[in-house]
Amino acid sequence: MNSWKLGRYPVRYPIVQGGMGVGISLSGLASAVAREGGVGVIAGVGLAWTDSETARFALEDHRKALQAEIQKACEQAPDGIIGVNVMMALSNAEDLMIAAAQAGAHALFLGAGLPLSIPQEVLNFGDRISLVPIVSSGRAARLIRDSWQKKFGRVPDAFVVEGPLAGGHLGFKETEIHSESHSLEVILNDVLSVANEANEANEANEANEANEANEANEANEANRAIGKCSKIPVIAAGGIFTSEDVAKFLAQGATAVQLGTRFVATWECDASQKFKEAFVSSQSQDIEIIPSPVGLPGRAIRSPFLRELALGRRSKVICRYRCLKSCNPATTPYCIARALIAAKRGDFEQGFAFCGANAHRLREIVSVRELMQELTQHLN
Ligand SMILES: Cc1cc2nc3c(=O)[nH]c(=O)nc-3n(C[C@H](O)[C@H](O)[C@H](O)COP(=O)(O)O)c2cc1C
Image (tube, rainbow, N blue to C red; front, top):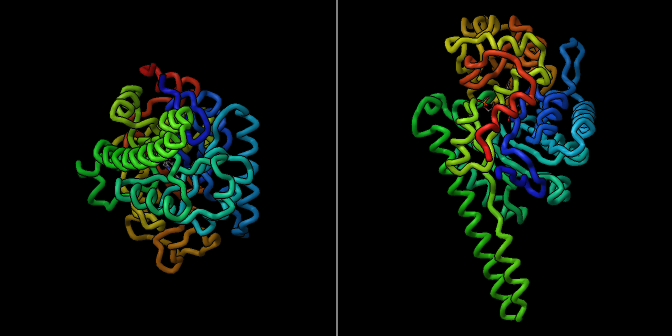
């Protein structure tokens, strides 16, 4: 059976729908995936942004908007598992994590930067909220694991390992994106080693506990202690497209897989029809790597906006949001918040859509149920 546990939560299928901002995966998509037995993830970025000239960046608005999405998703998928994706590069990352935990999200997926500090308010929820860093190397996974163990006395409940074929921001230098040594297959092995090192550490601890218990003539407890050794599940992401891909990465040792691009081409995806059509009609030559004010490269579908940008025609950025820790409005080539809000609406004169390397293989928009059935057909 391919059912698994994300922290304390059982999940029927080893499929996670990756968080997609801005506004691409909200309660509609996340709840549909959760109802079908996968993990549905709401993207926490920019939920209160609007394209009005008087828009503000009020922390309270974002908190409330995120909590409303979580509540809606949980109502629409009462037995499902709902996660929230928080980009560490956001200036309100900590605030969003706390808001998500308070609203009852089952998991936090923490990407676009190393999640080395977790607010105490979130840690206080214990295992009621699973904490899942998104990494692109074994080195990052080890750093996070060791730092969490030392600072918080807990290890991640899972890792997402995202390879260079993924949509959105990529945790690689541009030169690494096309190199074999950074393929998902290679980095998955590296992260699996880190997850298994943790496994061995846990086993050793638990065996010690068991021995002590034995000495105290508590043999039954000792056996129970040995039996519950935990493993950090690893979730593979980036370019996964078919049920054969799913089966392949599970066979390599992943506990589950995370997909983004395929979930864009679903009726339940929260983006506009034009956004989805841009995916379905894209050709391989339309997909390119672009720089982003987040400080990481990203993969996107070519658009009139990106063409203008490549020609160096950029207008002065007036920053309304202060959304990124690292963005300098005086030097940034464009405002990513505005560009992504425009794209969600389907306005590619003013924006662009992030996409995975396999977006050009999409042919049609399907329901989440059909997609989940397709992806899980080769599983036991
Ligand atoms: C349109 C789009 C938006 C995305 N936005 C985010 C995001 O806000 N935060 C994040 O961590 N990952 C984001 N991602 C990455 C996805 O969560 C997922 O890991 C990735 O798309 C997997 O690769 P695939 O698209 O090839 O399946 C985005 C991906 C896409 C396609």
